[in-house]
Amino acid sequence: MRRAQVGDQTDEWTAMGRVPGWEVRIGEGESPTIEITGDEKIGAFRGIVLIGRRWRVPDPPPGSVRLKLEYQTYCAMNDPERPRSGQVSLAIFAPERWGQFATDPKSAEIWNPVPDGEGVLAVQPIHRQGEDVTEWREWESGDLAARLRAYAGREVVIAVAWSAFHFCEEWAKFRGVQVNIMSEAEAEKQFLES
Image 1: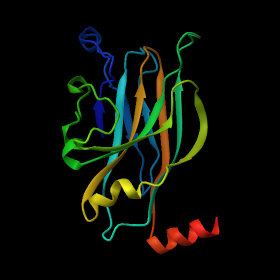
Image 2: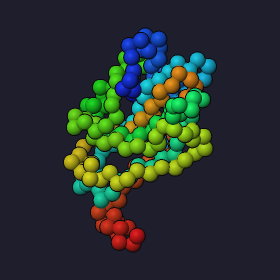
Image 3: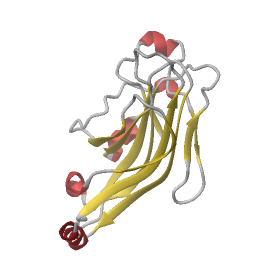
Image 4: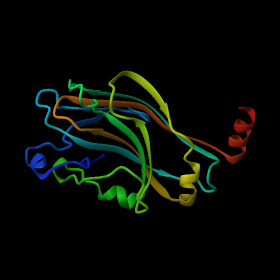
């Protein structure tokens, strides 16, 4: 697990403790439920929590790679002028870039969640801010095989990035995170049958 600041973070907010300090609880098992909570009373936290795991890209490269998960996200803000928080993204990193993210909320640095050619390999939106999702919602990525082909036989870090921006209670939950791969032949057969 890693932490980062959103792009508009100020030194003043950091000094006030408005950092990504949420508690992250990861359940047991192969595909555990993950809960990001702990700011119900004060509403002080803001930033990005990244939950990732290393994954070796098969060699030869697969014909299809998709990430699947279920999520919830909530923001208590009640200001019609601003969209509610809780932005969720899929991000894929080179392990070296993943290692540069902070584990301590107070040390988190600003991260702009876009591919950068320097270790941020892919970023794909899952849920944009604007609405709460308080019942489990399923999501599946587009095919990531082309983006990962150059990394065949090497490790990458596949992460879910949750961003929250406001000074109020905000939380998120994830479960059922899995990477699904198909061989070239399986992907071609599925394409032809669709």
